[in-house]
Every structure is written in structure tokens, then in C-alpha cells.
Length: 453
Ligand code: UDX
Image (cartoon, rainbow, N blue to C red; front, side, top):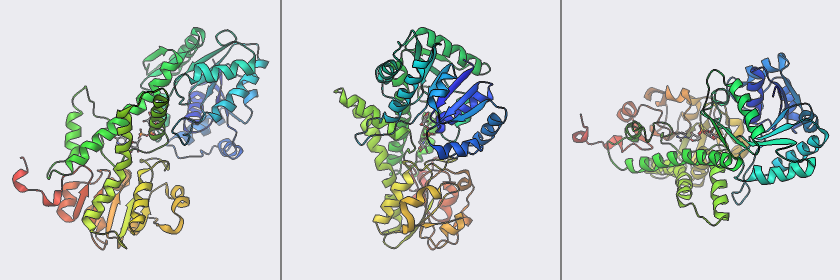
């Protein structure tokens, strides 16, 4: 497998293309969006992803990465094809497989023209059984060939995060190879062993449906951890002097729990966790099992942005005509992605309550402009956003917000700060102003006798 094609150039596909090219693999990266291809050909990335631009430029320059709109030619000219198209959410929560279907039809047609064995690798997040029924059926019908004999088929989910897509692709915590046929699984295993010869991640060999559910279980568990700690945070908030961060870091010391993904906040967003949880719930319900735990994870997350607004109301009394500044709209730091960002729900509720909203974000303002247009004010700097405000809410964990000091808020009309991300030093802030934070029992009324030490 020294020549591969990658179909679908979103975060997963473009990052995979550049990483494989940087490892000396000849890659043909394909997408149907002509504007996107034009950008990529010039070395530009159609989204924000640290260090990917450097990798893209060097991969194009050294000739290892070719960009194309022609799936069939790409498949015919390579040994294996990674499918990395999006599987967006349908209205009922199920995964929309229309892009996958269109791509499989083209791959099938290309396979018909090929005499050599070819491996088709499904990297897109798809519901269990999709690879071994939906994908297999289309490929066999279009190619008039047989899986396991004329071509190989593997479900091979990825676990990369936006904002660290390159390092996650270079250093995955595991490689999951769910192969239909042993030959395809063996070839993909040796391919990954070469790619990851220095870091040697565990390689899990399984069948396609197990690989598919592993991806959903992974994301569902991460979502569960976040909703769990947010639930504990909401309880801690009612206990003066208690801070969920101490609770989280201490329970995280228990190796059965682990310290990661226990940061309380305004709820999880992004293009994956909310969508994948819905898809898993919908998949399960269609088969007659109602996954109550997962539904509670979702409803806890839906409620979480409103907890932040509730804090604002408690401190301001009434939100009508109050100036509220929002620091951060991206769903997390180091990205300009606002898909399912808690900021959007917070801003919408503030507007419903009659607040006057200004927002700042180092990267993502253009992304929310079309949602709110002239209903909110877009500020070019933090100080411009918070000056003369009645309340400031920190919604995204950008590093630059972590450096803010109480003095930076002095020009506010009322110095009421709500830290929905727990990035500010609560001791310093509570001393100087009205301060509230997710998971922090009211620091302004903290009883001295209960200080502990
Ligand atoms: C996620 C998974 O981590 C990744 O493995 C999968 O392939 C795609 O979905 P991503 O959506 O990029 O990645 O973001 P992630 O870093 O997981 O964060 C998701 C959301 O949870 C963000 O809104 C983040 O702010 C929030 N979060 C994360 C918390 O609120 N608390 C935490 O402790 C961790």
C-alpha cells in the first residue's frame, strides 16, 4: 500500500492525506467541492487546524500529495481508498449516509475497471453494520465483483480531535482495524505498523461492526464523562466554598476514573460528540432498546448552557437591557468551529431575555456572524467587548482569556464575571468583584469558618 486515495477532505480526510504524504505515501486526495480543491491546491486549509498548513504545503511541494476531483481515476490509480466523507445528522438523529452512498457508487464503478486487488477503508463514522451491509452491497453491485476476493473491505474509525488533528493522527491511542477479509486486515495492519513504527500504538483487529460501535462507544463515553462532571458541578455550585475542580482532580487520581475529560463547563459541542451520541441513541431505539443513560447525558448537556445564563440572572437580577459580553464563541479553543457551540445557545437565551450582547473570539466571529447578524455586536478585542458591560461571561477556554486579571475588567459598568469555563483564578476574582463560575459554590458568600485549612 504505497499509493492511496482519500475521499472527502474535511478535518479527517485532509489531515490523513497530509500525514500519510509526510510519511512518504503517494496520496491522491479527492473532494467534490471545486472551491475547496482550489484552496487546497494553493496550500490553504479551508478550516483552522494548527500545523496542518505547513504539512499541506510540504506534501504538495514534495509531490507526495496530489489533489483531484475525480474519484474513479484516483481509485484506479491507487492500491487502497480511505473514505472520509461526512455523515451528518438527519432530523431524527440517524446518520445521513447520502455522501457515503454517492462515493461508494463511484468507487464501485472504478473497481469494475480494475483487475488488481484493492482495499476500501471506511474511516467515516458510520452506524454498526454499515460497512458490512450498506457499503459492501453498493460496492459489489457497482463493481460486479466480490468482497474478500476481488477487493478488501475494512472499517477503520479515527479518534482525532479538532485543534490537535495532526498530532492525533500521528499518535493515535489505538488503531482499530475491523476487516471483512483477513487479507485486507493484514495489509492495513502492516501499513499502519510502518506509519507508526516509532510510537507503536495498540492495533485492535476485529470485524467491521465491532470497529463501528467502538467509535460510537468512545465518543459516548467522553460525552458521558463531561455530562457527569457538569452534573456534579451544578450540585457543587449550591455548596459555598466547594469547587468542582478540586473534586474532579481528586476523583481523577483514581485510575479507574482517570483525570481527562472531567473539566466542567458550558457543555460539549462540536461536530462529533453531539451528532454521534444522537446517532447511537437513534440506532439503539430503532432496534427496540431505549438507552436511558445516553439520553440523560444528552439532556444534561442541553441544559448546561442555560445554567450559565441562570447565573447571570442571579447576579444581575433581570437581563432586560443589561449589557452582557461573551468571551469566546468557538466550541473549544484552537478552532474557529462553532458547530453546536454552547455559546450559540447562551447568546440566543440572553437575547430572548432582552439582554444587549457583544461577543469576542480570536478566530470564530465570522462563523457566527450569519447566525446573529446585527442582533449582537462583534468586538475586535477583549477590552472592546467588555468595556461598559454589566456582566461578562467566559464561554470558550482560549489561552488568551486565561491570562486575564481583575484589572482588565475595570472599565465594565458593573464588574460581574461569570466563568463558564473555569479559566480564571477564582480566588483573585472573587476578592475583587462579583464572581460566579460553573461548579464553584458561591465564593462571594464563602463562610470563613468553612475554609478548611
Ligand atoms: C471529539 C473526540 O474527542 C474525538 O476523539 C472524535 O474523533 C471527534 O469528537 P472534538 O469534537 O474535536 O473531538 O473535541 P473534544 O476535544 O473532544 O471536545 C468536545 C467538547 O467537549 C468541546 O466542546 C470541549 O470544550 C468539551 N469538553 C471537553 C468539556 O467540556 N470538558 C472536558 O473535560 C473536555
